[in-house]
Image 1 (cartoon, rainbow, N blue to C red):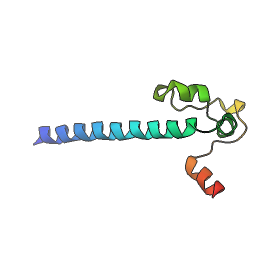
Image 2 (tube, rainbow, N blue to C red):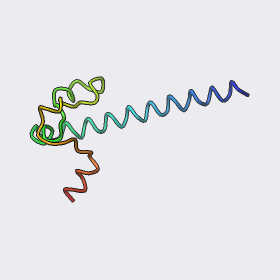
Image 3 (cartoon, rainbow, N blue to C red):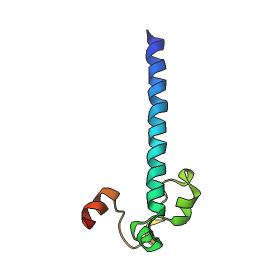
Image 4 (cartoon, rainbow, N blue to C red):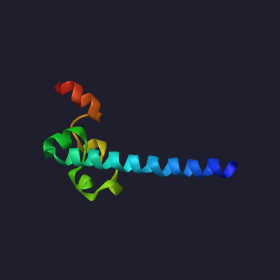
Length: 80
């Protein structure tokens, strides 16, 4: 019985890892569509975004961007 639980836990781990990778890819594609000014205002680095998921979290050092970090959900509410 214990080996079944471990087996299912491993399956869930791989499923969750795949979903997380997919979310990173979607977010990265969306951010890459934005212009450099918006990315800079949000604290994202286009160079890091272009490097891909391995460069996560794609953030510039805090002293180099204009504003505080903006969560995409907050940005969506501000523009609506």
